[in-house]
Length: 117
Image (cartoon, rainbow, N blue to C red; front, side):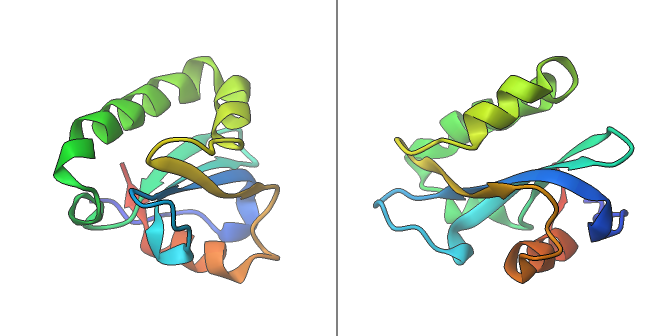
Protein backbone atom coordinates (compact mmCIF):
# COMPACT_ATOMS: atom_id res chain seq x y z
CA UNK A 1 0.00 0.00 0.00
CA UNK A 2 1.30 3.40 -0.96
CA UNK A 3 0.41 6.38 1.22
CA UNK A 4 -0.66 9.64 -0.37
CA UNK A 5 2.44 11.54 -1.52
CA UNK A 6 1.11 14.98 -2.45
CA UNK A 7 0.16 18.07 -0.46
CA UNK A 8 -3.57 18.44 0.10
CA UNK A 9 -3.32 21.98 -1.32
CA UNK A 10 -2.60 20.37 -4.71
CA UNK A 11 -6.10 18.83 -4.88
CA UNK A 12 -8.21 20.83 -7.32
CA UNK A 13 -11.20 18.51 -7.46
CA UNK A 14 -12.33 15.49 -5.46
CA UNK A 15 -15.19 13.09 -4.90
CA UNK A 16 -15.56 10.97 -1.77
CA UNK A 17 -17.75 7.88 -1.93
CA UNK A 18 -19.30 6.11 1.01
CA UNK A 19 -20.44 2.52 1.26
CA UNK A 20 -23.93 2.37 2.63
CA UNK A 21 -25.64 -1.00 2.68
CA UNK A 22 -28.44 0.30 4.91
CA UNK A 23 -28.88 3.86 3.63
CA UNK A 24 -26.93 5.61 6.41
CA UNK A 25 -24.31 8.12 5.36
CA UNK A 26 -21.47 9.33 7.57
CA UNK A 27 -17.74 10.02 7.35
CA UNK A 28 -16.80 6.62 8.74
CA UNK A 29 -18.53 5.03 5.73
CA UNK A 30 -16.26 6.83 3.23
CA UNK A 31 -14.03 4.21 1.66
CA UNK A 32 -12.68 5.83 -1.51
CA UNK A 33 -11.72 9.29 -2.74
CA UNK A 34 -10.94 10.26 -6.32
CA UNK A 35 -8.68 13.33 -6.32
CA UNK A 36 -7.46 15.45 -9.22
CA UNK A 37 -4.22 17.35 -8.65
CA UNK A 38 -2.96 20.66 -10.08
CA UNK A 39 -0.53 18.68 -12.22
CA UNK A 40 -3.51 17.02 -13.95
CA UNK A 41 -2.81 13.65 -12.36
CA UNK A 42 -5.75 11.84 -10.78
CA UNK A 43 -5.49 9.53 -7.80
CA UNK A 44 -7.84 6.79 -6.68
CA UNK A 45 -7.43 6.44 -2.92
CA UNK A 46 -9.00 3.93 -0.56
CA UNK A 47 -9.31 3.58 3.19
CA UNK A 48 -6.81 0.98 4.48
CA UNK A 49 -8.73 -2.20 5.26
CA UNK A 50 -11.73 -1.00 3.28
CA UNK A 51 -12.79 -4.51 2.31
CA UNK A 52 -13.75 -5.22 5.94
CA UNK A 53 -16.44 -2.54 5.79
CA UNK A 54 -18.06 -3.94 2.63
CA UNK A 55 -20.71 -6.66 2.92
CA UNK A 56 -19.61 -9.94 1.31
CA UNK A 57 -22.49 -9.73 -1.19
CA UNK A 58 -21.19 -6.37 -2.45
CA UNK A 59 -17.45 -7.20 -2.78
CA UNK A 60 -17.66 -8.14 -6.44
CA UNK A 61 -19.68 -5.03 -7.32
CA UNK A 62 -17.33 -2.69 -5.43
CA UNK A 63 -14.22 -4.26 -7.01
CA UNK A 64 -15.78 -3.80 -10.46
CA UNK A 65 -16.57 -0.16 -9.67
CA UNK A 66 -12.99 0.50 -8.50
CA UNK A 67 -11.62 -1.13 -11.65
CA UNK A 68 -13.93 0.99 -13.80
CA UNK A 69 -12.88 4.14 -11.94
CA UNK A 70 -9.19 3.32 -12.49
CA UNK A 71 -9.64 2.94 -16.23
CA UNK A 72 -11.85 6.00 -16.61
CA UNK A 73 -9.43 8.25 -14.71
CA UNK A 74 -7.16 8.30 -17.73
CA UNK A 75 -9.78 8.08 -20.49
CA UNK A 76 -12.95 9.78 -19.33
CA UNK A 77 -12.15 11.87 -16.27
CA UNK A 78 -14.78 14.59 -16.66
CA UNK A 79 -17.73 12.25 -17.00
CA UNK A 80 -16.35 10.06 -14.18
CA UNK A 81 -16.31 13.02 -11.79
CA UNK A 82 -19.77 14.04 -12.96
CA UNK A 83 -21.13 10.54 -12.35
CA UNK A 84 -19.40 10.06 -8.98
CA UNK A 85 -20.58 13.46 -7.76
CA UNK A 86 -24.22 12.45 -7.98
CA UNK A 87 -24.43 8.81 -6.86
CA UNK A 88 -27.48 8.40 -4.66
CA UNK A 89 -28.81 4.90 -5.37
CA UNK A 90 -27.19 1.60 -4.48
CA UNK A 91 -24.48 0.72 -1.99
CA UNK A 92 -22.06 3.43 -3.23
CA UNK A 93 -23.22 6.95 -2.47
CA UNK A 94 -21.58 10.33 -2.95
CA UNK A 95 -20.54 11.59 0.46
CA UNK A 96 -18.86 14.81 -0.63
CA UNK A 97 -17.55 16.38 -3.83
CA UNK A 98 -16.04 19.69 -4.80
CA UNK A 99 -12.95 21.72 -5.47
CA UNK A 100 -9.97 21.88 -3.17
CA UNK A 101 -10.16 20.17 0.21
CA UNK A 102 -8.46 22.87 2.30
CA UNK A 103 -11.85 24.01 3.59
CA UNK A 104 -13.05 20.50 4.40
CA UNK A 105 -10.90 19.24 7.28
CA UNK A 106 -12.68 15.90 7.41
CA UNK A 107 -11.83 15.07 3.78
CA UNK A 108 -8.33 16.52 4.17
CA UNK A 109 -7.69 14.17 7.09
CA UNK A 110 -8.96 11.21 5.09
CA UNK A 111 -6.55 12.07 2.26
CA UNK A 112 -3.69 11.80 4.73
CA UNK A 113 -4.86 8.36 5.89
CA UNK A 114 -6.00 6.77 2.63
CA UNK A 115 -3.70 4.80 0.28
CA UNK A 116 -3.56 4.45 -3.49
CA UNK A 117 -5.85 1.75 -4.84
